[in-house]
Image 1 (cartoon, one colour):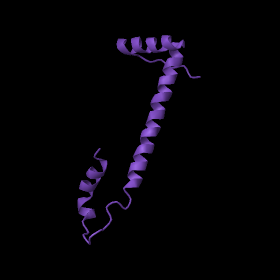
Image 2 (cartoon, rainbow, N blue to C red):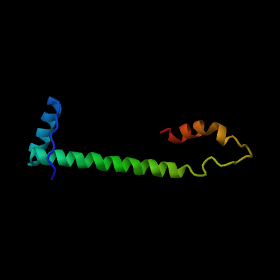
Image 3 (spheres, rainbow, N blue to C red):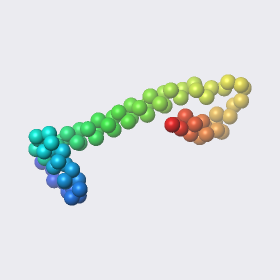
Image 4 (cartoon, rainbow, N blue to C red):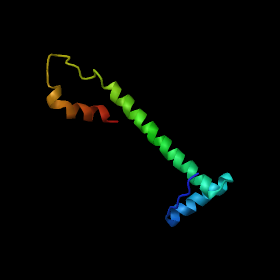
Length: 83
């Protein structure tokens, strides 16, 4: 393992200590688990974005002969990412 020094706000420290105490683990282990969870969430977010982008392929194909995709691509993307 690599030794690392970090600074936490008092609120972060309190929450982290409660988290560790509730699970019966050390503060260091709690930090490692939280870091792992945050990194995994980032990977999932990228996967979700990739899937959403892949779903756009062909969605705005030239259906009625209009050829405005190159001019209106921002509008189409905004529509695609609207919840």
